[in-house]
Image 1 (cartoon, rainbow, N blue to C red):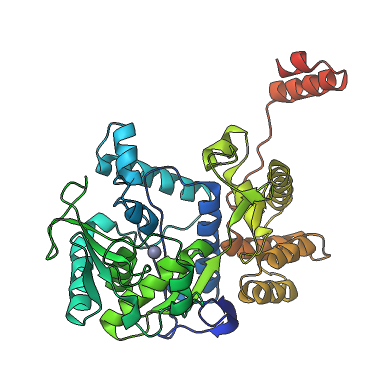
Image 2: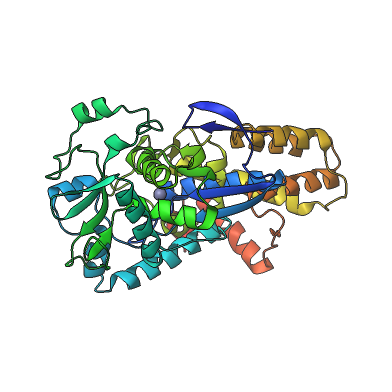
Length: 432
Ligand code: ZN
């Protein structure tokens, strides 16, 4: 039995897919105008744990993750009418077209996910290739009376027409109105009515539509692409906690109003990552991408290991010390396991415990602890290896592929020499 915390009900519930043995999983994907940072990667590693856990339980998983390659403005930015979105800014800065920018950073993103052993979703649709599907949904919403013009630029969704608005985030319409901090775009009935289409022929990326030349609002793309590849009802929808409101709330409002069917059955949200206990930001200088870790000689999988040590509903607090500890633990695990021959028999009691942990709302820290307990147990090494490699189908630490490389004699001598110099405090010589 798999149990997951469902944001929609605020409870841990038993998970069963709608269709027997087949799970439809949708993950909100990256906006590809810059490198993904390690907080993004923590979020995709958790989606990967989820998929692997479902597969470990014998489910066939169809996983879809969108690529946001249309530049978007947030509702705040729209209201402030700053004009340029991040994709446009990147395109100008790098003297490239938005498509070149998107292609470059999409490639970089998948290079990172591969290095982190994140399984590639079977479908990774691009927003720019699904404008027609978005237009179709907006047209349905218009026909059903859920959309109206706010001024002559914004074709928006009327949240007051959707009776379940606020259910996911626990926000109430009246409170939303009162607490609205943003200046409403002129003509909006409610400040949280959100753009479905923005009429703007001058926007760098634009398309024809029944509402004039322009581009789609951000939220509509996830509704369009998830339903195109997975049908009107998804088993699990994942995202970062900052997606709950308004992004996911709006996805639900659009999708359910258009189809009349339940959109997402389970909503799984991953908490933020922190760096040294504070929020990661470019201005604070604590903004890291995977390449920064690799530059300091860390293995990308050490970061994956670090992600295993924290539950997804807690903040992952990244520090260089914690990464160092993760790297050491990973090395130890690899060295140990690579020395053993794999046997046919596993270790049933540990395997049972492991399964119970991962199925209990993806309790990876517990699963990792069980792996170490097994390593230290009295089972024969061959059985331990058989079980641990099975666990690695979820952990994804590449333990089966890892081979202990014996350094050459010359390298060994140099290492010894370096250590000797370091002990004598001759740092410069040692480094040389
Ligand atoms: Zn989304």
